Length: 107
Image 1 (cartoon, rainbow, N blue to C red):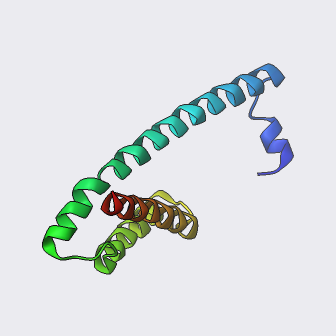
Image 2: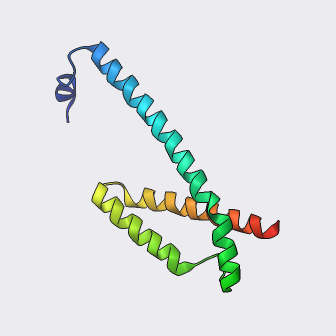
């Protein structure tokens, strides 16, 4: 899209400013939701690590992480999201969860 096409999208600066503010507000709401979901995801570490110990499993479960990545790769493709970046985010989330599991074992 060139600048002329972009300029034709808005009636005036006020409309563009309003859309910008509303979009930023919604992003802030989504960020809050994401942090809450990450917290909820991480809170499952206790039950996961206790079950793993009982089952004689290691904290790192290669097959599970491969399943998660395969699912996320498909979602990224379906939603037209950069797969490499989404994969990095999932790596960070699994690292967060594994670290929490280790912390629980050290209690």
